[in-house]
Figure (cartoon, rainbow over the protein chains, first blue to last red):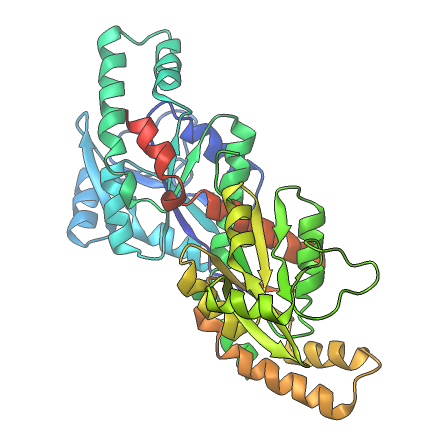
Length: 201
Length: 201
C-alpha cells in the first residue's frame, strides 16, 4: 500500500458500545488491525501469542518500560498491561489502520507521542440510555452502576482532547461514521504531501 | 434539521472534473445545495431567477458590493458576477450543505469570511491526464491548452490553503470521498458543542 495507515485512538464511557463498533468496522475491512497489548498475566486456553496479547515475564515487561518501548502501561490485579510502540508503528508503516481502544488518560499520552493520530470519542445517545445499558448487564450491583456513571461523567471532562465525537445510537450508523472519518482523514492535505509534490513536478 | 450545514468550497484546475463530481454528489443527496451567483448579464432562455442566478441590474450589483453583501465578485466580458453572502448563510442555517465552486484566489477570501468552511482541492490523476482531458475538448487550440496547463500549475501554489485533496481518477470514488469528508466534518468536536453540553448536564 502506498498510503501510510492511521493510528486511530478510541475512547468513551463503558456502555457506549466502543468494542462492538470497532469490531464491526474491523470485520468489514481488511486494512484495519487492532493494537495488541503486552501483559504479564498467564496465557489462557485458546489465546495465542501475538494475536490476543504479547505475553511477557515481569522482567521482560520491566525491561520494556525501561527501554521506553511502551506507549503507556498500568498495573491491574497484580499484572502489568501495556501498549507496545513497535507493533503500532510497524502496522501503520505497512499501510494498515491501527485501532487503539484506550482510557481517556492514556489517549492524551498517545496524542503526545503520535501527534498525527486521530482521536475519536464514542458516546451513548444520553446519560439515561447509558444508565439503562449498564443496568441491563444483570450482574451489576447498584453501587457499581453508580460508580460507572460517575466515571462516565469524569471521562466527559477529557472530551476536549478529541478530534471527533460519534454518538452510538444505531450501531450501523456509528460504524459508517467511523468509516467516513478514516476515509476523510486520509484525504487531508498533510497526509498527502508526497503525492502533491509528485504532482507539482 | 438540528445540525447547521457546512459551507464546502471546492477548487482545482479546469479539467479536474470538479463540476461533474459536485453535480453527482448533489443529485444523490437532498441536503445539499449549490451556491447561487448574482450577475448583471442578461437572462437566457430556460434560466430562472434564483435558480441559475440572481439577475441584477448594474446599479443593484454595485449597491450589493458597497453594502458588503458579496463574498467576492469579478467583472468578466463586461458583466459582473459575484457570490451573495445571504444565500449561503440562509442555506447553511437551514441545515443544508452549501457547495461553492470557486477559483483559488476567491477560496482564500471565503475562508477568511467563514473560518468554519471546508476547503477541498480536486486534482486530476496527473498532469499528463489533465493535458489529455483538455485536448480532448475538440475546440481547444494548442495555445489555449498550454495556457490552461500553465494556469493549473499556478493554481497548485494555492493548495496549501486547502483542508483536503481529492484525486479525481474514477468519478464514483471521488464522489464517495467527497461524501466522506462532509460526513466526517459534521462529527468534529467543534461542530457538536451543543450536543456535548447537553450531554454533560
